[in-house]
Length: 202
Image (tube, rainbow, N blue to C red; front, side, top):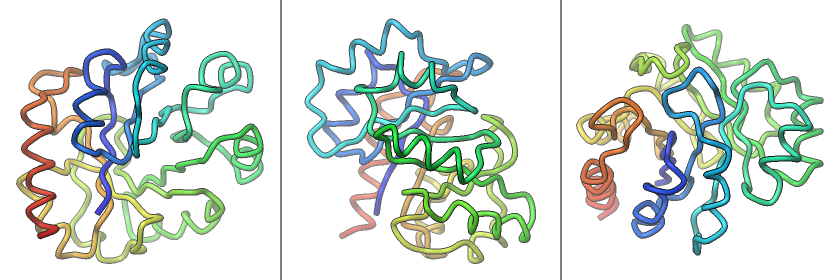
């Protein structure tokens, strides 16, 4: 099973995620978000020994200039939440990044959209609300492709992860469910979720 935690603070939250072997650490670059990263804080990322964790820049239609000035050298992955085309994904990969492409799912036919982004390294199936913490419809979970290339987001928590795993999901993307207040990760909730995942593995 793989875990990605999104909306992290580069100074406060990174070490605990590395210590608990979180696979992907996501940092939001979206000004309308309460989890938006202060650009000067990116410098803190260079001091961490990432071990087996990877840093992900979560973006919406990032420009080449933004990527080169802020992301290059700091992140292995760029997560794309915008209207990026297959050509744009290829351009970003050629800049030296792996790509996570988000596919917004409201109804079953939306799942098929992932096929045009199949060259992405990871495809993330998410709900339509940008950071609205909507729950992914359970009736559609069994319809999404399975495997380590495909991740699921949408109100995943310690309470429902076991059921999601039984439905075939083994790559979980979390954000708001690990917060005690909007935009602030609760380290105890992170630890409890990791413990739950480790229990499921055993």
